Image 1 (cartoon, one colour):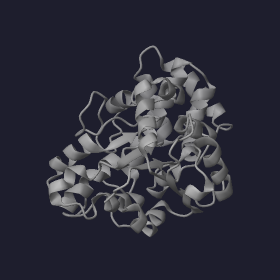
Image 2 (cartoon, rainbow, N blue to C red):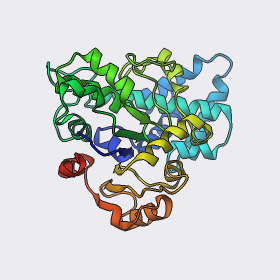
Image 3 (cartoon, rainbow, N blue to C red):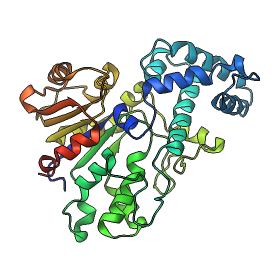
Image 4 (tube, rainbow, N blue to C red):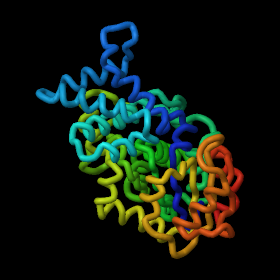
Length: 338
């Protein structure tokens, strides 16, 4: 079990390990999907046709949405992420609408095609099979050694900041609790709804259909057009996150309480770092970093970034290496369970 207040920062590298697209993949998809001059030719794609159909559903706005999509496509060649691109293109409401629709579309599409299924294939299994993934390792850490009578407290010391827009954590965790404690899925979902503290600065592709709340709902991997327009409203820009007092308070509160900080595939790009650390941390938490393999800043650069932006010195960093997220969690399980 997690006995120390722990904040887990989940980045694009962690998403890639679950076969979800990262920022570069999404920009590539934008470049392909919004090339509308190829419609009706042998070079058109399914995604291109899908967006063409979505824009046609918005009466009186089709032309404006297409123009916005073309602007996003042109900007995608020079930007680091779609989130950054939406900041670059300012307050154009049509650009913002198309960008959010694209993020919702690709998040739900990734859920539908990922190895994580809506339900386990076999009774007693998990929706994502195997143990060589970070969700399994994190869930193991959460439940290990917790008595069934105290199952509701297993998430008390965990806080997650997820810079991706998918719902992988929310979808996986109830099944893990069900298996670990021998409870029914409804009870496990209730515990996750009440106890799991997760902040997603860029929003998420709606709430899962079993979750409480007022946000538009979509089942796992549901890319139905009716769901998409509502789900897109749950996506946020960096500016919208910064302006939301509640969202910022939730993020800062988890960081301020953390005595241990884990980075899973976080790219440490400037915009995300600015959202994460708007001020240095007072408590200098013990820190473990699983860097993406072959990409992003190296260990020494990350040490400098953490010192400058978060006030975390090199002596607080237990590990910072290019390694799969699940491997870092597995190899440090004895430490992380204390």
